[in-house]
Image (cartoon, protein in one colour):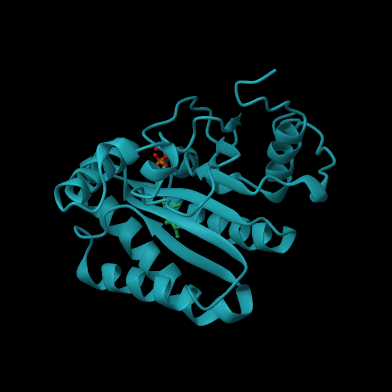
Length: 248
Ligand code: FPP
């Protein structure tokens, strides 16, 4: 019958003693969520920002160490100016609230991406948030903002080349661990689990270096509808996998 919700897979048990250390999420499907309701795309982003708040807080509650979310890619500047400005506005609103609540919420933020082209007020807010977050523990939430995996790798290559030119290091010292120190994610373990909602099955320039051995979880649920139950499904799927890292 039309008014019945579509059947959802049952919510499996999660072993909270065996959680991944680091979960990363491509928060996709905001536009389609809004379209289905006859709303502007910006309403989808506003709903997506609420989902982000709920999921980030829940990740802290269950004791996850790192959560990384894709909020705005290096390619997202191609979107209409009103949409870009609405996303920036939502980020600003979220950060202003988060700064005030960091002591209570223990959700500490860091940013991956080049913040230089962002509106000055937002950039300064990001810097202030990171500075304050240094004093808190709790889940570390990395917000990818003006972020692209290829851009990150090129920046790391340039930084390494510059360090070589300055005589601080030499090509012979470069290995995977050393290269990782030049990435935005320096000091953060690679994601164990990458979740992409909305039915799209691609990586879209997200954490290209860091995703080498990540487990993936795809779902048709649109990001604004993503719930704790859906996170449980993703975590249970992760726990059912056998990770071999190229071994046997
Ligand atoms: C992808 O969905 C979503 C984005 C490009 C923006 C994500 C931004 C937010 C969730 C709001 C601000 C974030 C924080 C951290 C407060 P889409 O627009 O590509 O959806 P579609 O594929 O259905 O069009």
